[in-house]
Image (cartoon, rainbow, N blue to C red; front, side):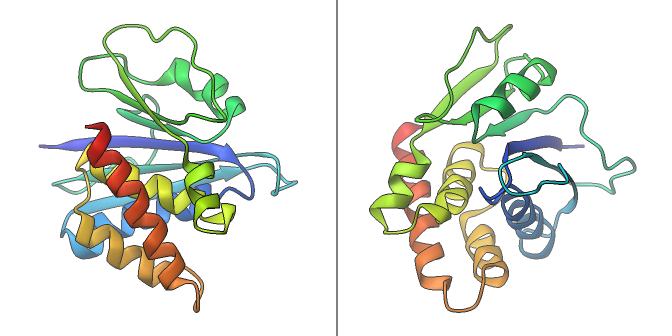
Amino acid sequence: MSVSEIKIGGFGGQGVILTGLVIGQGAALYDDRYSTMTQAFGPEARGSSCSSQVIISDEKILYPYVSHPDVLVVMSQDAYNRFAPSMKHDAGSLLIYESDMVRLGELHGNARSVGIPATRLAEELGRSMVLNIVMVGFFTAVTKLVSPDAARRAVKDLVPRGTETLNLSAFDKGCQHGLEAA
């Protein structure tokens, strides 16, 4: 059975919850796998700590919470400081981070890390708000846990009406960056 536990962290306003929704929906609806998503955020919402947890599996998922993620995606220094100690540190684990906003400490074990300047790439598209969708594209390319077609379809389904073209461009930009990093 193939099970992947993913935790996405950042601060409110970065689109952390939408990132988890896109990954989970892409896997469940368009790649015909099972997925769950849970979320946590502070009462202040924008600017406070925020996370989403996604599990993707080939079989039914009996417990929807992530305790030691295989893949950790962090978009802020606080998220890295909070969640990196809990990630798995074996050869299959991966830390994906926003390279302009997160300074890595020492990773223990055999965990791999790969960064992307998602905010800067989003700004090149004219809207820093799409950094989360840049990150989804990058995640898709480097993990291969969700197919690019499935993730693109989920992006198109979930982003606000009228922003589909911008968000799909952001996804493609992140995906391309991920293919070059691999």
